[in-house]
Image (tube, rainbow, N blue to C red; front, side, top):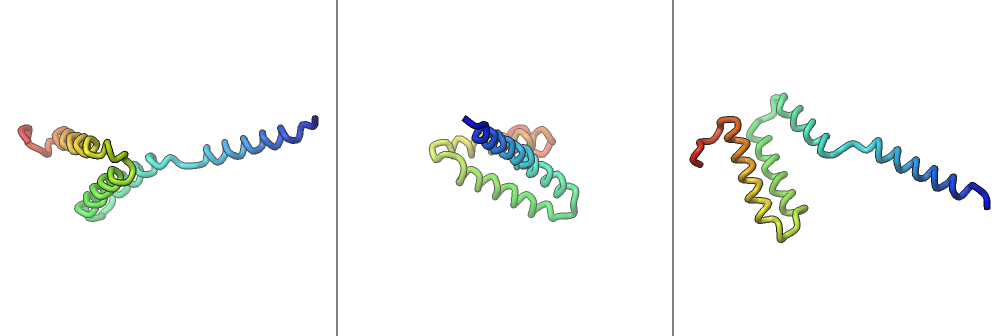
Length: 93
């Protein structure tokens, strides 16, 4: 049996691996974008609005229905912890 079919499969595997290696990580892009925007002169209230809408959209569209409430509560707790860590919220809130 000729080697050709295996070479074709091997080439296909190499092509898929190249595509996967060249595909940027969406989380890295998001983090970098947020960092860049944070250094710019963009209205900080608009930035906060977009981030909040992004969190709500992510929960509504990508979290299974049965986990949405728990995820929303966890998100609020995490936000509170991050605000506390920056001294931006009173300890009894």
